[in-house]
Amino acid sequence: MVRLQKPKAEENTAGGAEQLQRIALRLFAERGVDGVTVREIAAAAGQKNHGAVGYHFGSKETLVRAIIKDGAVELDRLRNSALDAMEAAGGPRHLRDVVDVLIGSVTALSDDDYVRFITLFGMTHRDFMIEAIEPEWNHAYGRCLAHLRRLMPAMNAALRNQRFVFMGALLSAVLSARARALADPTRPHAMWAGDIGLEHFAQVMTAMLAAPVDLPDSDIQMADSKRLADHGPLGPVG
Image (cartoon, rainbow, N blue to C red; front, side, top):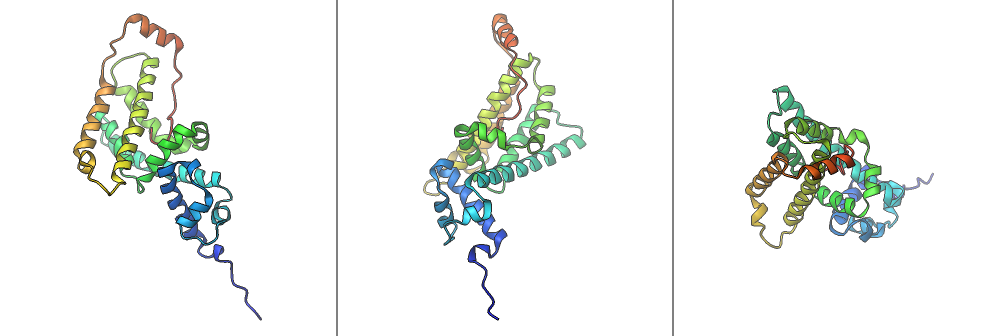
């Protein structure tokens, strides 16, 4: 009896999918989702079968969703763990405590390419990103916002929500720039080589959240009349 061999694409299915996802994340972080083909992903992952992405994930869109989910779940776990520890000790007591959770969770991710990928993807495919993120993957970000509302200076909800938008944009942009710099081994990056850059960034973000509102009453009333909705996170990072 002749035993038929399995197609190579079926061998080590889990490992092949993980490799493809890891390579795709790096390529997407460097060139954007639209700048990378499934054939390029398969070739970079050492897959001779150019249909490997379709075999393991069904489509490029499903692969992107898997990447979004895995990073978001890891980030949520890191933030929940840090918040659990702080709350068990009676905190967070200061804005800086929450800022450290927001920043430290991103820098602790197992793959630095994720923050670059999700920041770029959010700029080019915002509706897709928001639709792809399940609420349960962002629970910890909501916990961070709740603590910030308690610790920030008094201001109306519209201005506070504006400040959260500023915070999320700053968090994503700066940490993505840091990850991009550190991914380039061809030159030194004095700004991010040690802890000083991150420490200064944490101080700046804390100062932004703590700053008193200095706007004319008419501007405050206008912002309040428009009443920006209490937004959810714009992405897994912020």
